[in-house]
Image 1 (cartoon, rainbow, N blue to C red):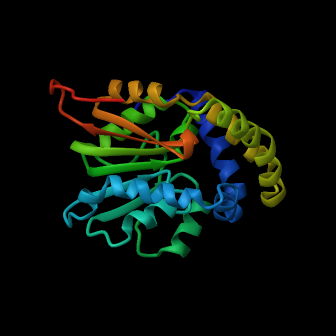
Image 2: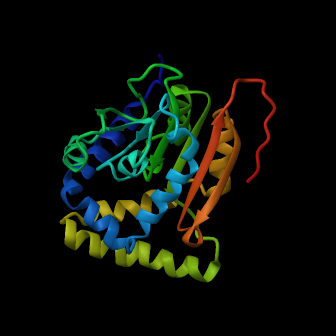
Image 3: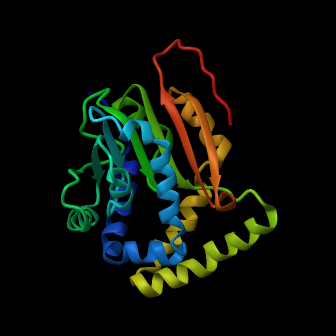
Length: 248
């Protein structure tokens, strides 16, 4: 079991993000639903639909990485026969998650260096967590490491709105209105100024597809949500040398 070595700046980045999320954990769920007008709940249901076959397999194990307060973990577990596990590096978030759904096993761990053996999981999800990693490429490699060959990775993340007029309006809301509301309710405006900053630096839909392919995923594709505010990316981990059949 090996993970990529991390630089001092990457370790410092992780510590800062952990501290930031620890500070807003108590208001995190409320603000997510408020600021998205509950659209985030529908997005998570769409992630679950991508894994319906795996979740219906009683022998399958699914890991929800950067699970936070476990909204996606809970959605995945709903009527699932597979075993669903959540992991996050922010203990206050996991404490809230455990109160919400005690039956889901929760593991405190860093997405850049997960404490699981190679080829452990049949599917891995990560929702609104990939952009917070200090190195997205290394993070994808780590997610690939813990997936079994043929296992599926599903990523839900903020992305680049596809319609120009809508893009401008959303970017204004995201950069100006959202930090003010988030700051007032959570008491930490810095956390909600970090959100649009982190999204602006995150790869757009097609660049993320290229990064997933480079990390060893095949049959990679994405679907835009709500005009491209967010997107679901998915790919299959295949053995090296297998022919790729992918689309964007």
